Length: 257
Image (cartoon, rainbow, N blue to C red; front, side):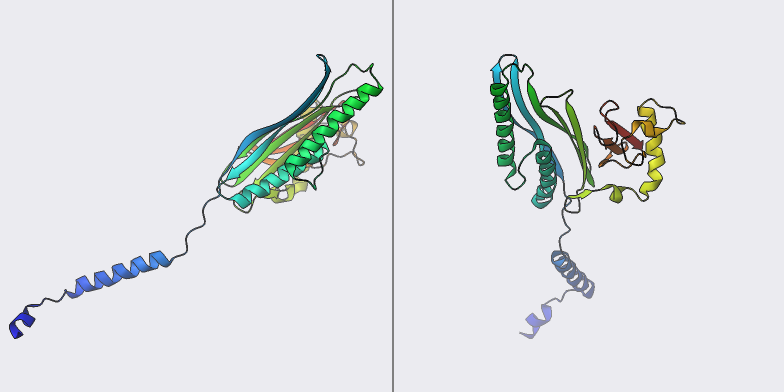
């Protein structure tokens, strides 16, 4: 028995130390909190339309092409979709208290009914009517997604109406919409650059008075309602009638990086 006991071998001390360190390292790795996943978003274009024709040449068209955002973080995608859907409904006269799909259907139905009533009361009317929206993803980066919506409508009158919505979203922080104050350290410092670019877009000389183009109270060019990040820089989008009359028209001003 003594001989057998003496033949048992103990692990060398270096091997024991390595084994303990290996077990400790494995345990520490397993117990470390997982890193949060990087949020990624994608946008698919969806369509909704309604149409009513009195004859082959006289129709009312309600055509909405909107983006539906999806991704690996549902809450962020939902936050982005809510902003896009709210802007869409505001532009087509939808009821924001209803679900988006129901509100869009209701807005389209109301538009068609108004066209039917107009033609019934004024059968001599020969102009069709339209409400339509298109969309485009201007940027889908790791940090920011930027979406553009363009609205066009004609429901009678001297000319069609247009409007634009440009929205940038903070992808890694819950899909929060980024406003001009989030993108510009000093908005006042940007205004002279915007004015110079706006004059150029409207074919004015740098020394010309920009006030002749504007309908703003102080005859100065403000920041637009729609500001968004794009690969080339920051896009400042002025809608029709936002700062100038229809004859002057809307304007997209790009200030590059």
